[in-house]
Structures are given as structure tokens and as C-alpha cells.
Image (cartoon, rainbow, N blue to C red; front, side, top):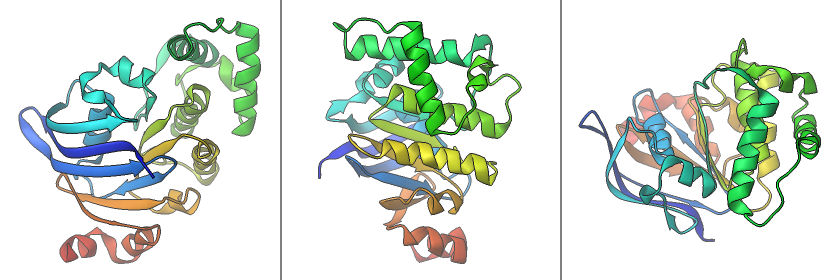
Length: 253
């Protein structure tokens, strides 16, 4: 199976201090991989850098998404190529409703993917939005609220997953999307990932805890420490981490 995301000898620095040291990672088409590790291991640095966050500097290495070199792309071009990032701390956009925000994002993405296709009408998009919200068991009134304004932590993460379902990326980077969620919100996040698993879609799920992996079964788990992947394994690795803790895994590496 060919890799949808291929990372080779990646080095990433922040303020001239190297955080990621020669990381290698292959995520085949159709697979969900989880990255776990203690605080400060470089997990968030990795996914934010892949999306093109300006605070991070990729000093060397290669990153291919569906065979395309994304390091030569601007952030919006990476999104157009099918890369999606669900933020650990989503931003508030006052005065912009969820419906209008998602309509603008969807229109821009579809105009790039299908330049000859007629632009979708707001009414047709509303039907699409309602269908996706029903899949996540979200009340349609949620779409009338301003983006993340007054949202709970769980509501912010639900919106990230709804955005993913609307935009249908080929590769999603989920940066601790499960952080601080109650069980109902956690299941909605997991449902969104599982709904995307059919077809051409892969995912890199960054998490501290094995809890979400009870609902999203990963094809592979990677453990990071000090900017490198020190161990990889199947879904059972998460249970070892829960039982033994990171220190035991790190000590054996």
C-alpha cells in the first residue's frame, strides 16, 4: 500500500532551537496513525509545521502528500492539496456564523478542486451542512452561532470535526482533538474520524491518552520523545502505555 504521507529525515526548529531531529514517518493511504508521547516531545510542533505554521522552521527533510512536495507550498496551498489541521486551541471568529464560515471554506476548496463546476448555492450548501451535522448528532441551531464564540471546549472540537467532514480532506492532522472532552464529545470526535475512514483518507492523531483509541482504532501507534519516534507498534501499544507509562517505554528504547 502506497504512503499518502511520507516524511523523510525531517528537522524542525523554533527560534533557532531544533525540536524535531531527523524524523521519519510513513502513513499509508486509508490508515489512521496515532502519535503519543510526554509533554515537550514535539508532537504539536510536528503537525503545526506540516500545515505551514510560520512560527516553525523546517530546516531540512522531505514531506510528500500524495506524491506532492508540500514544503514548497504555502499554507493555503497545502489545504488545497487536501491537508487539514484540527487545532488544539481553536480560535474565535466574532461576527461570523458557523454556517457562513463553513460555506466560505467549502466554496473556496471546491473552486480549487473543480474549477469548471458551478458554484454551490447557499440553499444547497445548507442541505449539505444539515446532513453532516446529523451524522455528528449536532443540533442545526449550532450553525447559527458565531465561530467558537462562547463555545465550550467540547463544542470547539466538534466544530473542528464538522469542518473536516464538510471539506473532506485526504489527510487530517488532529492535534489533541480529544483533550478535555467529556465522553459524549469524545464519541462525536471519534465518529467524525471513523466516518472519514472509507475512501482516500488518512489521519495522524496526536493524543496524550489511550481513551480516544477505544473509539478510533489506529492502524499504528508511534511514541515520540525529544523530537524523534522511539517506538512504533499496533493498537495494543496504547494499552502498554496506559499500564506502564511513558517512562517505562522510554527506558526500554
